[in-house]
Length: 122
Image (cartoon, rainbow, N blue to C red; front, side, top):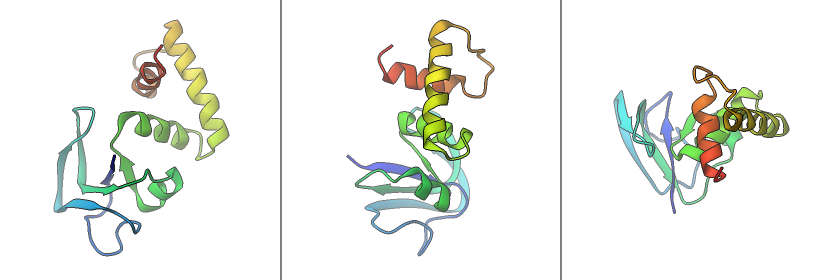
């Protein structure tokens, strides 16, 4: 299974992504690209890897995960100031609030908590 990431700040080119990629597409200008969740993302293109990138690498290269659960984890990690322990706490807290029906739908983390709750089978 390949892992796809979107270029948010620059197009595919030499030195614009970490080594080891298996495929990539895109270029100038940036445009809407379809995501795995069926939405579009404004990006310069995408790059694929045979293994998932760690979040610090995604952050360093300004790449956004395409897979919805991986992206939800990345969003919570970013929300927690890139601290994995805090991200886990926030994920559990927001998912619990979502499941209890107490998380406001206009919360900026609502859709990500929903994705994680669905992935956990709850």
